[in-house]
Structure formats: structure tokens, C-alpha cells
Length: 288
Length: 253
Image (cartoon, rainbow over all chains, first blue to last red; front, top):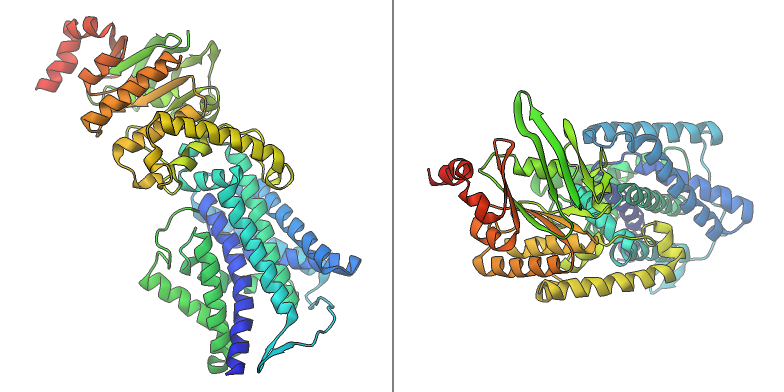
């Protein structure tokens, strides 16, 4: 039983990471209307930037913030160099371009850091024990950080002028334009936010596991699965679906084995697409 | 002169949908455009508001040529349109719909939400006050927190009007504001439009409901097959034999 609970907790943590990345994906989808396949690579950039910051300063907080910042900058740069140019083209163009952007990011990181693994050299901490369940203090911090980030994103979306405008553009881009809403500023904010959220997911993933150039790309299937399961373009759905997916993956691991964890995400993705293409939360529409 | 339409022309293939239309809307006037289906009224609106690029001609607003200005630039210059089939931010509440349309200075950038919190908050307060005023004016208080997608057709038209007001528009172009709206709400809408007009906002209205429109406007322009065939007071225009032939005759047939 305690083993089961430990798996569930571990699943919750990886679920929050998946959920954050799915949120980054779904934010872009809701407003820019395409699935950004470079989302995983923004995670990787964030993780590498965080390791760099952590190694330089010794502070995981500063490292993490640097990761967020670099993630946001990467999002904005890729928008200005690539996705802005493709606006108004069929969304498949942007999707293909995003695969290319991801490829470039992975290659550049590979050239700079090599393809070996890096880790955050965090001091080992003895796990807490509640009854028979072991809880890693780091996991709690990761969970709290993820929840805090989610709270900030939802506050931005629902309680700030720029968030309201993002949701307006997601809802009806043409109407937004004739209402005098400048799409550039909205897109700028959107890509900064999406990049930062993805980067944070990468940082948290990097703390829990290892950092290597393919780490984010490898996460893409579960992240897509979560975004689809949550109802694409639906931020709350993406996060909840990420958590569900993470927990299911972890709990299933003893039965299906580690190798098939990814296959499980893929199966969930397929089943959702077949049975409930709109996802758990209804309409295939914009951010709301 | 508030709005000057200077020889707007649009053709698809050989078909002239709008051909050399020119008229002016004086500052603070209430002007109507009528015409049978396919006369080019909605296309004219799209040309004026920059949704479509004109083949020839220009639009001047408050003395400034709009040339190739985008729909957004035109909206920001103070000229806003509504749609025949009302459009709204369907997942945003009525209040949020109106707030989204308020022209922003601070708070438009993500960074402001974090680092210029005070400025943004003060501005939000100002916008919120204006939104409440607009909601009260349009009698939308009961549905203020309902997602706009759930409103009736008539209420959506009010939200559209509200959104146009929030942009600070000095000229509002209404595309069939009375279509699909029940008679009670038509009366209500007319009263609101007249009140706004008294505050100095100009209106250019496309409408099929002639009786309702005639009570409202001081000048009517009639289009048929892309051309402007008559202009004048409602009484003059309706007495014009060419208009009777093209529009009223067509409607009776």
C-alpha cells in the first residue's frame, strides 16, 4: 500500500510537470491556433539555463528564475523569427516550422553541452516518513512551485488586462482586431508566458531526473496527450489531464514496465481522440 | 465632416459589387444606408472599416485619409463597426467583453502586470467605472457576469454596441442592428442610439427594417447593384421613383 502511495505521489509530481508543459502548449494553441512541437525543447532550454545559473551561483532559486527568463526570451524570439512570419498561413505550416525550431534548439544544445547527461548537484536529503510512506522534501517543493506557477498563470489570464486580451484574441481574433486590441502585444505576452511555463516544467523535470538535449522532446507525447485529454486550448483541463496522466503512468509502471510508460500516454491519446475528441472539458476552442 | 466616402469601388471578376460610391456623414449625424439584398451595403461597410481592400477610392475620417490603414488602426482612430450576425467574445462575460475593448496604455504588456501593478490597477479602476456606466446605460446589469455567448441575439447586439462605446468610438457603423431582434428590444436599441447620438456620436446604419430606420435617421442613402441611386431625407428618398422601383418594388415582388 505504501509503495502504491509513493508511486502516486511521484506520479503527481511528474503529472504537474506534464501539466505545466501541456499548459504552455495549450496557451499557444488557444491563441495562435497551432500545436507547438517545440514546447518540449523550450523545457530543455529552461533546464540547461537553470543548471547554468545554479552552477554559477549555487542558488537553485536564481537558477530556476534564469531558466524562466531564458524560456520566455526563447519563446519571444521564436515568435518574432518564425511564427510571426507564418501568421495567416495554414496551421500545418506553423506546426512543421515548430518541429524545425525544436530541432535547431536540440542541435545547438547538443553542440554546446554535448549529448551527455547533467544533473543539479543538490544535496541529498533524507526523505520524510509519514506512517510508512516516504516523501521527498524536494518533491514537495517542486509541487508547491508548480502550483504557484499555475496560480500566477491563471491570475494573469483572468485578472489582468493583458490576460483578458489574450482570451479575447483566443475567442475571436478578427473581432479583437476591430476592437482595437493590438495582436502583436498579445502575441508577445503569450509567447513569453508560454516559453516561461514550458521552461519551468523543464527545470522541475531536470531537478527530478537528468538533463540532456532530448529531455523535452521525449516528453512531447505525454504533453500532447495531456493537452488533448484536457480539451485543447483549455488551461485548467491541460493541468488536470497532466496530473491524471502522470499518476496513471507511475501507478501502471510496476504492471507494464518502465519502457511502456510512454506507450501508455500514447494509448490514452488515441483513446481520447477516438472516444472524446473534445477532451474532458468540452469544446475545441480557444483559451477561456 | 466626420466621415467622407470617396468613390469606393470593389469588383469581383467583372462584377462590380460596389462602384464609385461617394457620400459624406457629417459630424454627429445619424445616416442610414438601405438597398435590396446584394446591393453591396455590407461590402461597403467592409471597405470603410478596412476588412476589404478597395480597388479604387478612399475613406477619410475626421479629415484624415485612411488609405490602406488596417481594421485595427481604423478602430483605434475612432470608427468602429458591428456585425450583421453579432460577434462577441463568447467565453468572456459581458463585463469582460466590454473591458477588453477599452483602449489600454498600461497593462497591455505582460511585464506591466507584474512591475507596474499600481498604474495598471488605477487604470483598471477607471475602465471598470466606464464599463459599469456602459452596462447601466445599455440595461445589461442582469447579464453582466454571463458569458456573452449565452445571450439572446438582441442582447448580443447591445453588447456589440457597448464594445463599440468602450473603444471610445466617435463614429459607429451598425450592420443591420435590428435584424433578428424582437420589437421591444428594437425600440430599446433605437432609444439608446438616439441618446448616444445626442452625446455627439455619429452613426452610419445599414438596415432592412425601414420603419424603424426612418424614425431614427435624418439622411438616407439608397444602394442598388453596387451604385448609390438616391440620397436625401427619408421622405424624399422614399418618394423617389427609382428607389420605389429598385427597392420597394423589388421587396413587394
